[in-house]
Length: 209
Image 1: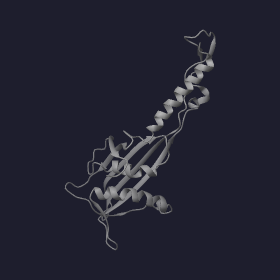
Image 2: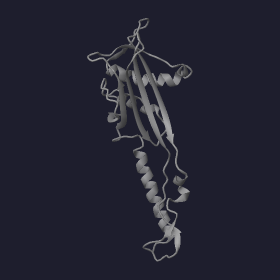
Image 3: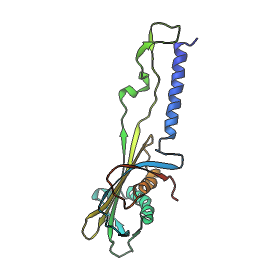
Image 4: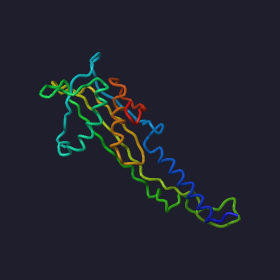
């Protein structure tokens, strides 16, 4: 015979197991060595044009965050090189200016996601000799979710015209973005210079190849 206490304990175990399974997928991975991201690209990249020399362009707000900006540029540089872009030589004038950015947005939980509420309210104990009203439903212990996004903007230096913009985003249970910067930039530039403006799913290795 199962008592209400036994039922709640079993529900808690099920809930924690479900959360642990979700945490394993919290990086948005298709597997343990891949990252899946939603990618959107925009612009008018000239047909037949290859990459070119570039310099990173900094917004005024970025100039006071040198360490964070350096982390972004270090993650983006190998991806740009793979797409055919090369850093401008010291003292030379670049063909292009590249801006990079990243952000993390937290999805707040509803008060009903608090595990104290048990996600069930009052109900009848079914399939049990117990009668009357008691707690029903299951226990959920879901942590907050985070949306992580990177952006790349490539402009013609001489005219300032935007030629290509890409954004890549993934979601998970961790707010840490730095380990995913390189894979997210790789996803953003995976199909360069493809431009369609429609979000698409791109899967890339978590470590560069």
